[in-house]
Amino acid sequence: MKVEKLIERAKIVRENAYVPYSRFKVGAALETESGKIYTGVNVENSSFGLSMCAERIAIFKAVSEGETKFKRLVIVADTKDVVSPCGACRQVMSEFGNFEVVLSNIEGKVKVTNVEELLPKAFDFRRDPT
Image (cartoon, rainbow, N blue to C red; front, side, top):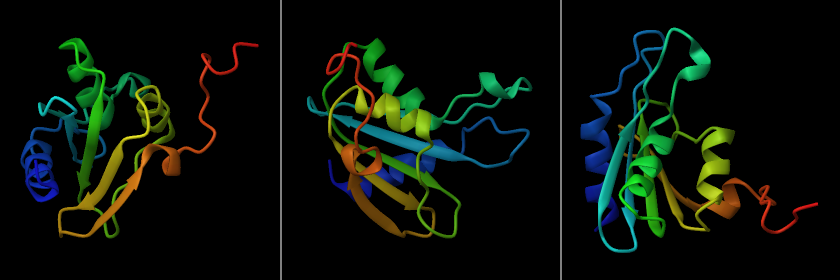
């Protein structure tokens, strides 16, 4: 799928975010190597540590359906510059390889990067179990 269509999907699903505390809506669209698209939005909780980011929701939805090979992840929010994933999301992304990550805002600003650029030297127990 073209990046522009994935950005549009992330913008649309972003409206479903549950953000009664921050009012900061984030949408994500994850394209798998098989061509399927999984979306996610951030979901807040009054116990803030239980909140979940859009990126991880999209990834967890894909994994729950048996998909673990990802082509690209698009993230969209209403920010001045492109939105950037948190550290927890970066670590979860790194579990599934070095795929493309498209950072965007609702005004159309876009930055294309990848997992390794976002999280160099990521922790991976499989590489160094000591």
